[in-house]
Amino acid sequence: MGKKNEKSEEISIDITLRPDRWDEYVGQEKVKTNLRLIIDAAKGRGENCDHLLFYGQPGLGKTTLAYLIGKEMGVSIKSTSGPALEKTGDIAALLTNLEPNDILFIDEAHRINKTVEEVLYPAMESRQLHLIIGKGPSARTFSLDLPPFTIIAATTKASLISAPLRSRFGATFKLDYYNESDIEKIIERSARLLKIDITKEARLKLGKASRFTPRVANRLLRRARDYAQVYKNGTIDDSSAQKTLELLEIDDLGLERADKELISAIINKFNGGPVGLKALGSALNEEIGTIEDVYEPFLMKLGLIHRSPGGRIATERAYEHFGTKNKKSMV
Image: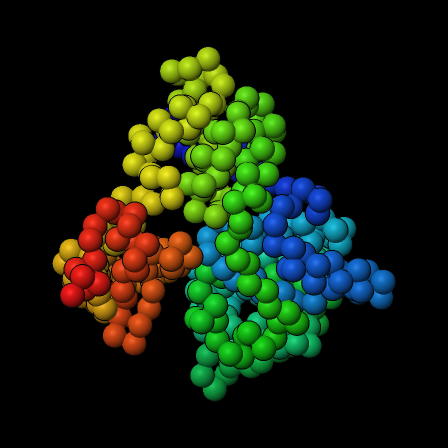
């Protein structure tokens, strides 16, 4: 029961910290500018917004953007996820319950069942729902007209979205990692909403360790708040932030234990690389997909590893950060 209550509280805090106005959404300026144009044009014509696809790493604000669009358009937004759409009946039930101009938000869109996709194509293209009733010779097809609606899909794996589905979206946007300045602004805003006293030095330290990701920044802020509440006077200062990171085994670049183990494996087990994903996954006892989708983008953003035709290679910066000599450069 304790864990369940704790998780509910975390979700409640996440909702509280989610921006509900465009001017509160920090970062992703190019995406916001393009979305602003699409929304204003649709409102000017009195139409529903075009279908939209967002992709990027977890925690960058894809869901938040979807809800902001719904609020800006003045329509309701219903939410589901790819794994929840197992049968054609699942998507049919959602689509037939939409009111005119409603938004259907689909998270993890790369995991939509292919048979469900077949139903989505005509629905997105011509607002027609085609369903097959019965099986065998007695099966019959009937069509149902749908009201104007918008599908906003989000995914962390755009490459797994099928070409036919991708082509049905009017616009596709990639959300990039945030810069440290924007992350600091997000921490400042979250601290204000949660009524947390935090020094500028602490904001900078937590921001630098936040993996350029708002969700991580807010998580670190909450853990620093816990530490300051128990061991300090409630104010998050530089020492509180540092101690929080140490307890979480996060260094000043935001590297967690798994990141460090990955780089250490490349340097020490594979002589700095190049090393293929299969060999690296075996050495770490980690799934290849996790390495490729979770750890690698951040480590490449930091310039600690890079890809080569032969595999992953640790960079000079990785050797410097870990205080290790690059034996290859000494030859």
